[in-house]
Amino acid sequence: MSLLYPQHCVSLSPEFVEPSMTDVYSNRHYMLKSEFEFYAGTLPGEFVRISEKPTNKMLLQPSIACLLIDSTGTFQPPDEVLQTSLDLYTANSQCKLKFRKRFDSFQWPAASGCSLLVEDSIKTIYTKHPLTGEVEVHKHPFPQLPLFNIVGKAHPALLAHQSLRFRIHNYDRTPGDILNKIKYMRLDNAIHPGFRRDWSWYWAKKGKASASAGVKRKALGDANVDQKRRCKSSSKDKLVHTREEVAPLPASPQRKRVRRPVHDIRPTKKLPTRSRCPPLSG
Image (cartoon, rainbow, N blue to C red):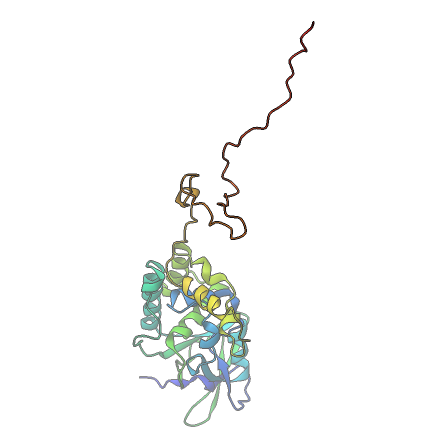
């Protein structure tokens, strides 16, 4: 078996520097962030917190980090990981929201043996041997580019979702490709509209406490109950009181009589009116 290179031993520059911590999937990527929350079984807007965890971090050379941010490159995990994503996404998109399965609630296949994919405009890639430190040059289409082992706590689900974002920006017609299956699955099973709303105000660390905190929490919970929207109550469901059912108001202490409701119309004694008959003659 060939040696797996750490992900920070590849660069677009022959000069390797100290690797920096980079997001696997940036919180600034609004395109598929809400889709991950829905298909991966999390709460709407929860990616704000997920993006800050070690499961969304890995060490990279600066030039490779720019590829992930710009969706011009990705570390595509092996097919076992991609198939797990496809199965999870499909199951969560076809059940009620409260029955979805979280991506971090079960054991995933290891993401060892990732392939570095870059857009066609990139013609040269450099790798540094993890044992000898020797720098090797690879030219497009990179037939000798090694596979990579993601060192750290980066979650395979986030690696797969980053690869999906790269595939959407760089379409490939490879038959039977699992990423293409995930892409088509998204078209057949659209996300719940509640996940497209901006929930950053709820998950913000330094959000100001207010009297409406309970209302915010309830709104977040309602968005994770059922995929079907609640029907508005019709006029038939409203209770209508008839005139006979309305009880009279209590008697006023000043006036020893029963106060009538405003809508209670009772016949009153008419005052005598002037006769309109013509006067009698003679």
